[in-house]
Length: 171
Image (cartoon, rainbow, N blue to C red; front, side, top):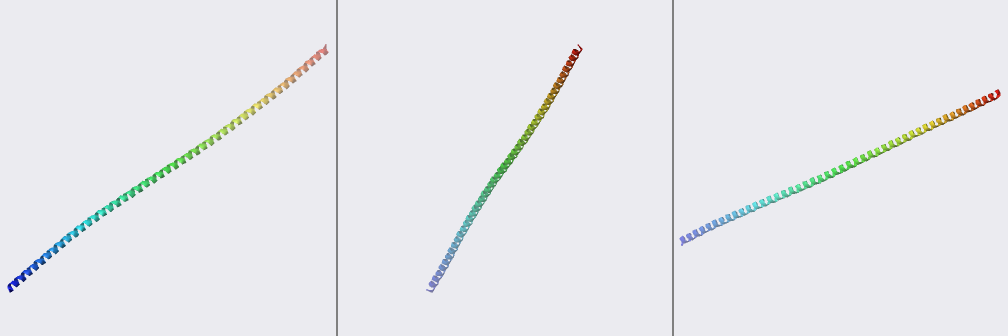
């Protein structure tokens, strides 16, 4: 009986030991599986985070590129507007300058015409005065000649009459 009891106890002890080993093994395997699962989850999270970061970085770069392009386009548009304005102002200034020159030329031409007309009138007046003076001189000379001729005729007539009188007296 004692031997049987010892044998039973031994069997019981061995079974407990085997059960404990089996529990330890099961626990170890469970822990190993959990660790693998945790590592897998951690790796997946890291990969997802990295993808999200890359996506965010790409989106940021795209946004920055769009912003830069927009700024560049706006600057080009502003520069073009400024150039057009400058060109328009230059054209306006040139037009004003041309108009001023044209007006000055017209004024100078008009002055020259007025001067020419005045000179022509002055010349005509002098010519008319000269003609009038010459006419008066000619008329005076003619009148003087007529008077002289008349005096000479009168003298001749008087002399003729005197001669005739003398001839009559002689007879």
